[in-house]
Amino acid sequence: MPLNADDAAQVRVGRLEYRGGLALSSPQPGFGGLSDVRLTGSTARAVSDEGAHFEFGVRIESGRLVGVGAQATSGMLLDTVGNELDGKANQDAESMARLPDGSLLVGFEQRHRVLRYESLAGPAQAWPTPPGLEGAPRNGGLEAMTALADGRVLALTEELEASGQLAAWLWDKDGWAPLRYRAEGDPRPAGAALLPDGDVVVIERSYSPLTGVTARLRRIRAAQIAPGALLEGELLAELKRPLTVDNFEAIEALRGPGGETLLLLLSDDNFNPLQRTLLLLFALD
Image 1: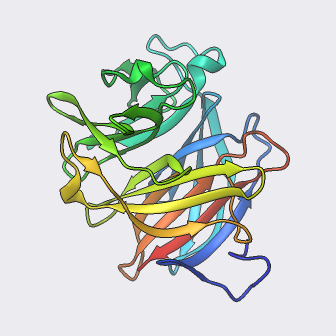
Image 2: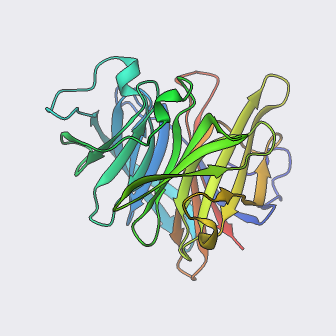
């Protein structure tokens, strides 16, 4: 995929340099609806908003996205007794954070909660729910979550208000502590990732029938992230038409071969034939 189908020479937007993109498809049943992704080496693990998990290889060579594995493995997320999550209200996985021990926290909307998975293919373990999350709109809960360099976990909501801003929480050994996130205009947090330097990158997105999807990337400095804080991110880039853009809900960060910071974006196609599952790679300067 080019960054701009109308201008093949364009390779920059804001502080990002385009490093390649793909439109993904798969014969695997239920492929699509991907709402968050975490990368371990060259293996991507993604969850969908219909309760599925997928694993596939990502090929990055010389700092460019050149392909994905020919096959993907998949399955349904399980509950705490090992049964498949049943019904959309229970299945709506929207965010993930990888803990220091390698396990994954998964945040769910509709039935707002957090579950811990030692493996996405195995049973879940109960995890404390952020206090007040039960008041979130049905589709406005934990859309973005990431572990920090010190093992704490930052969780951002899409629509739940707290004193005029968006509700957020910070997890540490003492539990969840509240903080807030400032959003400007319609784009709201949809995904978050830890940058190699310890800062956090957040992807925000919105949709309008007139203008389509808008995606913004913001950087939150590590020093800002503390209980009670108001998080205000530095704008890195805005993606909208005519750029290649879709419903980006997932972001991951990694170190490139030249020491550069790479950002991997993944979109949720909503199982809509008019949308795509896009995987784009950028370098952050």
